[in-house]
Image 1: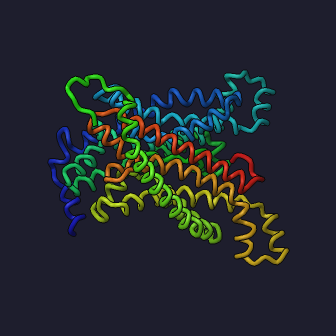
Image 2: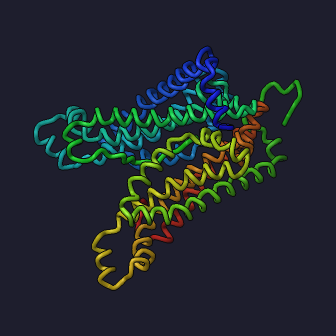
Image 3: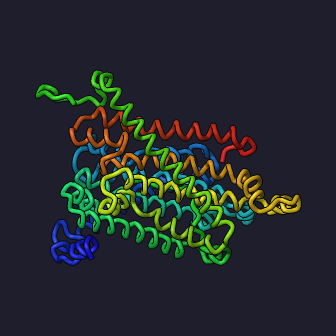
Length: 235
Length: 222
């Protein structure tokens, strides 16, 4: 058993399943911080990406923001936000939102851009007005790529939220940062397992949501795609 | 780091301190570049055979993609933490993670690049009497080069960001200065190291884009 046995004992200790430093409470904190950031990020990024993609304007900006986003060291951004805004959830949500925006913006831009022009022509020919065309024709076709962007952002935010523990945030990162500081390797390992599982659960549940949101016609047209317009990895 | 009770306002950049501590940043930058270079070269060496194998033997394809998709979702800090009990606070721990992530980006791009080679070209090569290995080396890989270099660009920029996180396991390059600035509550190293890390990523991306133009002049902007 050895080391893994001590990790198992950490998990089976009832003290780690209740209270402010218990797994349920840390899970709620982690999910809450991540969900808030992704939601705010989506409210900002998706409308911009959709509008730019629909009109096909500022393509360079929409694509390159992903490059810039990838270059931002999440660790540095978090710490600087902490220095500017002080303690609390605000600097964490602020930086996580900033990291969530680029993948969603780029993916939704590319998604709308790649709608077949013939389909748009047909929609126009059938008398769709611009707004109806975007909402009823282009968006449904764009759902797979838009959702790929949301998925990428969400996984990235869940991962980076771990670093929030460094600036006194909650979440599973607490176990990792505290485990490192206290040289408590079972705790460190348990925290890492929990974060990794949460990141995978996020990916899987959003992939499930995507399956629900993609219109039946498109689902029949092609096998479920895991394509993304951007590869992202931060923290 | 500056001390003194009268120093109540800490400017974002203390130029005086900065100008007397340039070597500190040079060393950090150098470590940052070394860690990144090992990760990219290691990833490249491993991903080429893997990508080619996954391309050649279809049965490999889905497992390779699925495993990389799953591995890629593991947060880097979590991965380092999972390795620490086994490999300790060492370069090995950092590079297993960094090489792993760059490998995943590169494998995917090698496969995509090889798949995008038009079947007509393969037919023509076969007709000209190319054997599989020669065809791979002289026809398929050169045509896959734009996608591979695009992968190298993404992997490089991503790795430069990830290296800062390795500060938490005692390495970090510029990340080390971010961590120190944070712990000592001193803005200058923190801000300068963050800016340098962004600048390094952008410079690396632009130089690789330049390399791409030289090596594959037929492919514009991928």
